[in-house]
Image (cartoon, rainbow, N blue to C red; front, side, top):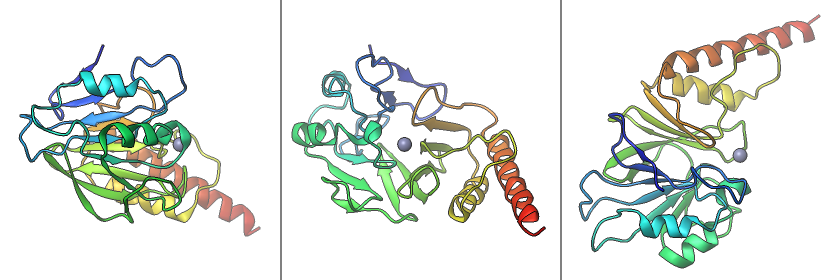
Length: 217
Ligand SMILES: [Zn+2]
């Protein structure tokens, strides 16, 4: 069973591994255009590690006369997000984008700041180190939607240390207007996204201030 994600958001985002039971896997989102136009780019955001994804893609309504998967964008290279890449490449021959240069099968290296078309929407690539040093998020201004991978977006308590790059990335995300966040694991975040991000940034900054105050003594 494929779950359709609608609710006024991007009409066609399918979470292909949502009912996966056989393997610990990230979500793998297939982003399709609204009308399956020929120039829409059917795109997988992460591929996960469950081989069943091949069947799910073959069952998906990807449009007549179109490649089922034109491109793959990896949010980062952790195995639970990327392990099925060789299978996907063999079955669908997509163009593969990722920040990591060390992962086999990546055609185009992202640095952050690029614009990519997913389905029929334009997305901004935002470099968000922290969870891993090759993490990116994908933001669509038109839909106010973010694909976040495993980038930590919810920090509710004080304490812990955070690197400078992560704080800068959070500041960048806080300047966007976001109403839906597709996470690397679990269900999407569909309310209070902006407030959640601002709270997280505040907690992260306070934690670091507290830490540097302590070090100064
Ligand atoms: Zn990860």
